[in-house]
Image: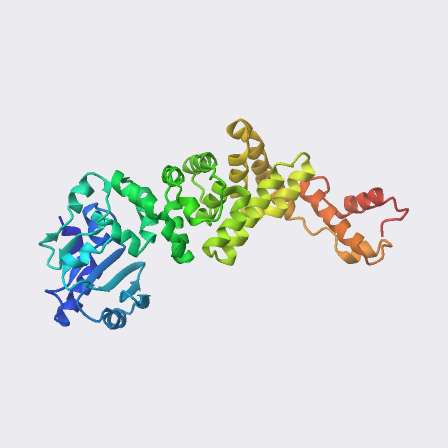
Length: 401
């Protein structure tokens, strides 16, 4: 059952370290690590429960393997060691025994432990059976009240491991969701982002909407747009392309223009906030594209987020797939015309405009922008044509230099 674990380099290094500290017999592999091993998932996080000063142990172990130490939780005494995209958590054993420790955990599938010789599974809450039944079941409702973020974690597990939430547990989640108001906003964002990271998160998001979880998290009465999220995920699942800031993108799909204010409530980074703002702005402008020049201006203004902007626009379009040609046309134009013409810029500089008899003013900037747009649109391809356009547009009786 635990053969893969015995072959894991970082598990073995940690076990050897605990043997040196005479903690081998009294320490355990716990929680999500046990769950993931039993599910035969890739082992990226290795969690130990240890009856000792775990913060200092983690610091020492980090030095020993040339890893990085992170103080994960000063209250519950959890130290993290990070190396090669693997995390090893040292948590202090709670309650004086492994059974007492597991009794304080969130869900039965996370309330299992394994002795470090990998010969014994400790499972006081039948988590292994729930694992086989693909059920997310609470250990105790009181544990949800101790850390209300566990409410959100239940839905995250629904998304990431594909388990159903047991009915009594689901009712308890709804009863205690309001307690998340006291939870650190950054922690809430982290759980939401993990949920959005899955390819079909709309199934979980729909469940959360039905259970009014978003009303408990955000100050809003606006219902989330589940269909827009579902449509966007369907497009992405049939594409080999990836979207940076994927969770922010899905958040915007879900809440549309309300997303700009709602994301502020979960402490986004500046980059995340700007991405959402730009995406919403792009979604509004794409609906107003009528002419070739409108199309060029849109691409120029949102080139750095063009692909997500097109999918976002389509997800909010009442005609959706029926108007897919419109969004495909914008992308095809970008690839075949815009990028080729972009290489020709700049055709003119400010001094070129002034040499034609213009005075320094805002008009010079207006002219340069118009020429740039026309070049990108393929209407102008050289300096002579640009000068002729200026003469025609501004009705100046001047000669080319």
